[in-house]
Amino acid sequence: MKKSISGLITKDKINKRGYNKFLKIDDNVTVEIDYSKTEEDAKWDGLKGYITNTNLSANDVYKQYSELWQVERAFRVTKGVLELRPMFHFTRKRIEAHVCICFVAYKVYKELERILKINGIQMSVDKVLNIAKTITTIKVKLQESKDTITKTMLLTDKHKSIAPLFEKNFWNKNSAGVSY
Image 1 (cartoon, rainbow, N blue to C red):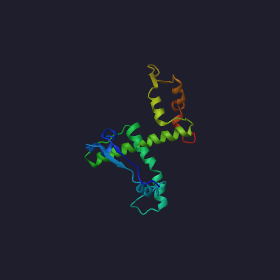
Image 2: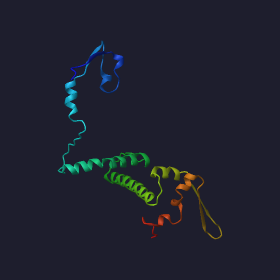
Image 3: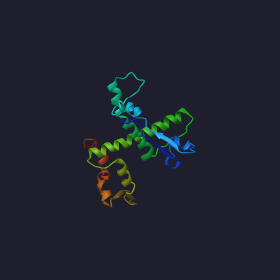
Image 4: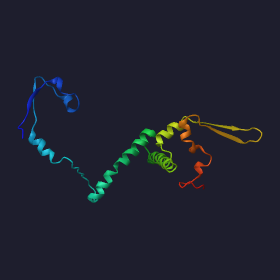
């Protein structure tokens, strides 16, 4: 076991991040590693602990914490992809309406994610939405017959990769591919 290693450090060797930016260093500073502290800290290496105020069992706390990434992802999707930002409402009705809109938008996102998976479209919802933004659909209403002709322009390979989403009866099927 080594006792300690010491050396001198100058102001230009200390980074300016964290609390260090508040330090005023006039002369050389003596730096020393305290090996007893590193040995004491090493006994916790590889262990993870949770502190909670719930009555859940240890296994339930661990399970809930391990699924936290899904909640974090939901926030990233609503803020990033769906571009839903905090709104400053002052009435209960408006606050509830905003929360409802955010929830419905996220539910639509998750439903599209599920539909893509079921139909074997191996792309993320984000990628599909970005491709879909570049697709043009033309509708022409004939004057005499009053019929409407619709044509979706799938010009690139990216467009063609999500072509099933634009087929006439695609959205009239349930998750098993059966028409309603």
